[in-house]
Picture 1: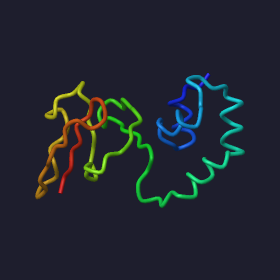
Picture 2: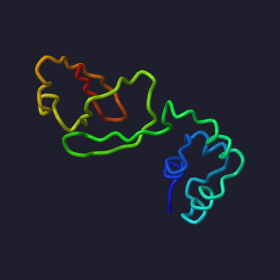
Picture 3: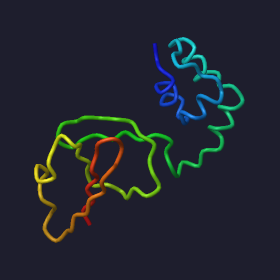
Length: 118
């Protein structure tokens, strides 16, 4: 049975919006499918208001071990070249290409460091 978090991911809405509009902590797959196929007015409006400039959810994946989590993207995140989770040392990742500089963004998601080569 999907959780409210799973429903928010599937419907591409925030957890806050899911709570506000009464999506229960656990929802049947049939009810979730029905919400997606026949959205109520609030969900239809939410989808219509999307500009496509900023995603509601993003998938973070470690470039070394494929650990994955879903997170709301932050405005301050740059465009990452790669992400590594805290199970690895930064030195485990290959060096940047010649002529590029690497910067690090700590605190991405619950356990990632973002690498940006420019």
